[in-house]
Image (cartoon, rainbow, N blue to C red; front, side, top):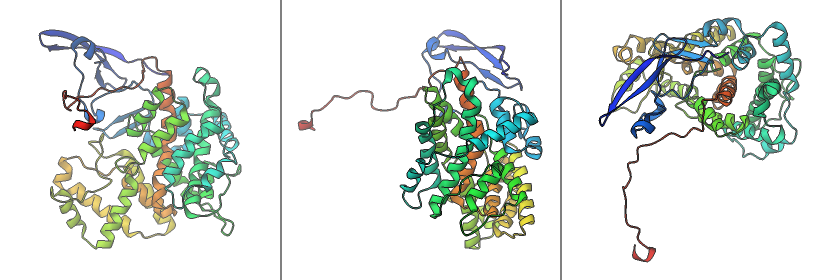
Length: 434
């Protein structure tokens, strides 16, 4: 249940001789926000905040991130506890339903996953008509929005009655769509989900099994995939989550909103960063450059070299998800008895950066993308699927945020303002006189 934000005073603002008072609200973790919703009405001003870096677009009880302390909480639960003790579907349930499931609720939720894992057979025609080597993220976003044509849209007026089926349908089918997108990309036949397998087992089997090759599911790999999906499950009002809320604010259905979120996640500055990290490490490995040389180049203003996977818009301390991912990545490679030169470069890069005053002063620590790509690579997952897996992990957060936005009486159609800097006015000239 949402805890109402409490008023924590007021801030006075004076402009052109007019004094206006704006309320200040405080969240449950002590963070404070200035309510400027009446600013334009009272003063004629709008705020200028590129990237919305200082703007709160909602109040939420789903996830809390403290970038200064390196803290991530889902519904009050610490990310370290969830990653260590939960399966992905438990965290999905927590985010969407507001509490961790009992054994009975967990069993029913898993059953719904199996019940809704298949996609309509006619949807296979869509897959088959995509060009060869179509990027899996492009296919996934298009197929998700197509779900609304094959399955009933969520009726927002009876959302509490139909939430289980709708959520299960989307969570389960996205996993199937993702695996089918990969099979389309490599030109292999689709592998159907099985009721005998758990959520991550099913995904791995649909990805890697084929008519000429039985895939043996490694429980250590399954556990690692569960953990990485948990680390991606939600992260406050990031770019893709804001897109989901924005599209949802127009009254668009859940499928359309999630599809838009997938497109936003695709960008290399957002979810595509884990693929960019692998490409960077590959380039360093192939060039033979020393880590010291790469670090020096990354600090130069004249250099185009950038260390991908370092720094974060929110964190001014070490990303706790990155610390968990690093440990899991190393354990996975040890279990698989793999020696990956890219991991060696990554570890050396991290150690060098953490010692360097330049990176210390700018709070440039490794983020969650820095190690997940290496782990996916060890699992045999190609780099163009990294962001797809990120999307599967982020899906529960998107759903929870969409639901919260649709139930929030304070929310309106998203419609930001701007500062116009174009020509003030000009005389129109007819075509013959131009």
